[in-house]
Length: 529
Image 1 (cartoon, rainbow, N blue to C red):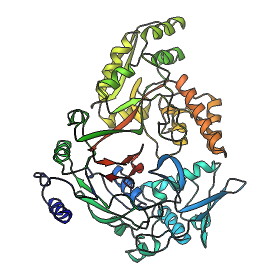
Image 2 (image 1 turned 180 degrees about the vertical axis):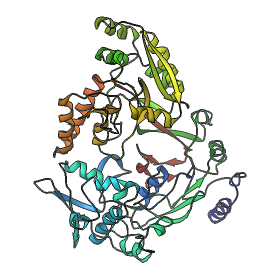
Image 3 (image 1 turned 135 degrees about the horizontal axis):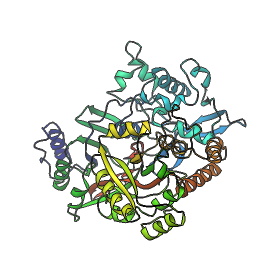
Image 4 (image 1 turned 135 degrees about the vertical axis):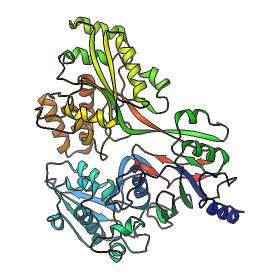
C-alpha cells in the first residue's frame, strides 16, 4: 500500500493544479506541504534572499553555529563543536566537529569553511552585506578567514561584541558548502552559482532530491546528519498559489500542511481532523510620529498615544491570528526580547495625561497607511480610538512604495508601518529604534528614528553602541532589554503588535517548527502518527 500511495503521489505532482484532488491520504513517512513557493529566485546560499529559499537553505545546509529546531532561541553548536574568542575580541577560533560529512560523503573541512565565506564575499550577491559588515572584502578575505586541520580562525574589523559576530555567522549566507563538489560544477568562473541554484551541496538534515522552480521541492532525510537523522523520511513541498486550493487539499487529506491560508479560511476549518498552530514572527508593527510636526513633539502626546490603541479589540477581531500584542522593538522568540506589555486601551488616562501636560485638543494629524488589509482596518481602529482623546487622524492610504517613499523623505505626520530584522541579532533593530547620531535632513538613515526626525538622546545612542560591543553575552542581552524598556516608555514610536503566522495541519502531524523568520522553519523533528 505504501508503494501504491507513493506512486499515486508522484503522478499527482505532474498534474495541473486545477485538478488537485487525486489522493485519499499522503504516504507514510512523507510530509506533503502545500505552499506558494513562487517567490524563490535563488537557492544558492550565497544568493538566496527570499522567504522560501531561506527555508530550504536552513534544511539543506549547516553553519558553524546555528539556531536549531530543538530551541530556536538558543545559539548552538553547528559544524563547529566549540569556539574561543581572543582577549581583544577581534578573532574567534572554531574547532570543527569530528565526523561531519556533506551529502556527497565528502568530509566537512576547514577548507570548506574558508571557501564558503570567501565565495559569498567574492560573488557579492544580495545577502553578502551580512558578512561584509565584519570588514571582509574580496581583497582581504584570505587574511580574515583562515583554516588549518580542524581549526578555522575568523577575524573581524570593528568594535563588535563576539555575540554579534556569532549571530552574523549564524545567518543564511554563512552556510557551509561542499567546496569540492561546487568547484567541480563551476562554469565560466561563476563559483558554481548556476549549479547551486538547481542543486544543493550541504551537510544539513535533508538532501535535495528534486527542485523544479515554481512547481515543487522534494527533500530526502539525511541519515548521517550529525544531530540525528530526521524523524520523517522525506518532505515534498508542492507549489499551490491559491489559498483556497490549499484548504481543499488539506481537507481532502492530499497534503499534511497548508502554509498560506487566510484567517477566514483558518476559522472555517473542520477542527476534527485539522489543527492550527500559531507562530510569532519577527516583524513588529508600530505607529510613529514625525518630530517635524510641532503638535506631535510633546512627550505627553507620545505617552497618551500608548493608551489610545485598542490592542485587544484589534487582536480579537480585524487582526485575529495575524498579530499578537507586543510592545517592544525586538520580537518575542528572539534572545534579548522584552515581552512585557504594560499598555492597554484607557482613553480616560490618555485624556488625563494630555490635560496635565497642558496639551490643547483637538489635534488633527494625517496618518499614512498602506492601502491593503489589514493595515487600512488597523488605521480605522486607531482613528476611532484616538478620537476619544481629541486626536483626530485623517487617513491617507497609498501603495506600499508611496508610503515607504514618504517615510524615507520624512514628509509624513503619523505613520502606520512594520519593521523586521535583517539577521538574528538585537542590534539589527536597536540601531533602527534606539539610535540616531545625526538627525540632519541630509544624513539619510534606514531607521525608524531618523525617518521620524527623532533626535535620540545622546545617552541612548551611547547605550546602543555599548551593547553592540559588550563582550559578556548575558549582560549584552540585558542591555538590549533595558533599551527596549526606554523606547517603550518614552519615544515617538508606539510599538503595538508582532506578526503571527498560522499553519494548518493534519492532526497526525507533530514536531513542525516555524520560528520567527523564514530561516527558522525546520522539518527535522516532524512526525506523522
